[in-house]
Amino acid sequence: MTDAVQPAAVHPVDEVLPLPKLFALGLQHVLVMYANSVAVPLIVGGALHLPKDQIAMLINADLFACGIATLIQTIGFGPFGIRLPIMMGVTAVAISPMMAMAAMPGVGLTGIYGAVLVGGLFGLCVTPFVKHVLRFFPSVVTGTIITMIGVVLMRVGINWAGGGLGAADFGAAGYLAIAALVLGTILLILRFATGFLQNMAVLLGIALGYAVTLVLGWADFSGIQNEPLLRIVLPLQFGIPQFYLVPCVTMCVVVTIVFIEATGMFLALGAMTGRKVEAEDVKRGLRADALGTVIGAIFNTFPYVSYSQNIGLVGVTGVWSRWVCVAGGCIMLALGLIPRLAYVVASVPLYVLGGAAIMMFGMVAATGIKILSTVDYADRNNVFVVATAIGFGLIPIVAPTFFHIFPDALKPIFGDGIILTSIVAVGLNAFFNHTSREQAETDAFLAAQAAEHI
Image 1: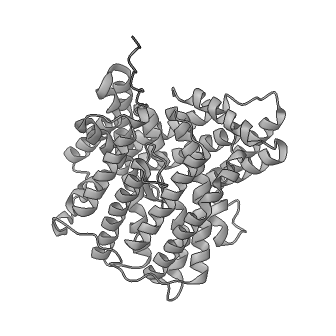
Image 2 (image 1 turned 90 degrees about the horizontal axis):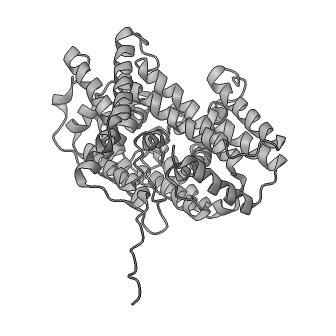
Image 3 (image 1 turned 90 degrees about the vertical axis):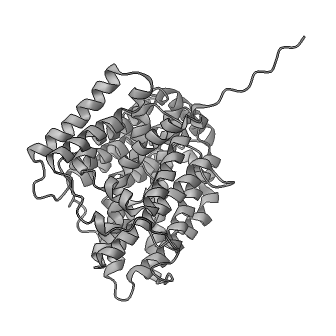
């Protein structure tokens, strides 16, 4: 008698959790990325002096497109989607270029959408060549980039905890107290709770902080009565995209920069979840990023990218299921269709989110450090790569005006510590080490073993 064939074990990334857990954990992801997601339409809409009702339409269209792009990335449809726990949102790299486009005579929103459409199509065209460059991302490179992603995000989290960069009362005692309450609650739950309650630590911490602000009257719901109960998001609601040479070329550069950053994030998430990320996986992920950008242009929103801050949440909760982010994508769709619901979520103060962000973004840096622990430092070339790349990545953080002599068009490169680290790490590794594809794949496997239990 032959032994019965045992069903193959389901990888944690593919595990489908009960519906209540999916909703709660998905809501955590939405709360983490929501502030950044709505910031771009607010900034661009303000730069174009759009009326408040049109800015509200921009936000709803953005949330709706976020949801669609997230579902494509996480569920996967044919050659699109990396099928990992990823939330999609508007890339901050595009803010400065789009502000410059908004200032160009005659360009306006439709010119920006034309550039976004061209950038997305450009991304779809270049993804087939990704497999030829993946060998330039061994552990010494990916670990360095991921560490810098965490460091750069930490600046964002700290600014949130202080009340938001540029706030007149930045660092007020009340803001710091609420942020400390949120962080302390999360740490206590992680220390003493178990199971699902432990996985919900971030959401519970944010919920407690939000409840305290409501009791104190610090949350602002003014204007919610003017929002309709339901708003259908329509394609091209702001007009047909227009095409101008300089904005289109600029957006292609933005997409290239985003692809470099996204590749590091995919490798980080693969290492964290224990699922090996191959060249084909990276191609599917980048293809979904590009398709999300095309969808953004059609729905009159902006370029989309896989959000790095949600990687930190994956690390904190220890929940690898991509279906959690599928639930998050569905929530984003609902927020895009129900303006008042989106308004309530948008009213979570930044300092509440900042208390959770300090830990979550630190988890990203911890993943990079763990991967760097697999690097052979007896080879001094690896030391040179890590030291120089991190040094360059810190320049925009410690001295934001260091590269002020460069033209504004280069600010997305020289003003971003992640991009600087990526360029220097890849370039120096190629110069010193000449990593083969086989060696890079071996490094990636070792990195996955090192990082999967963070």
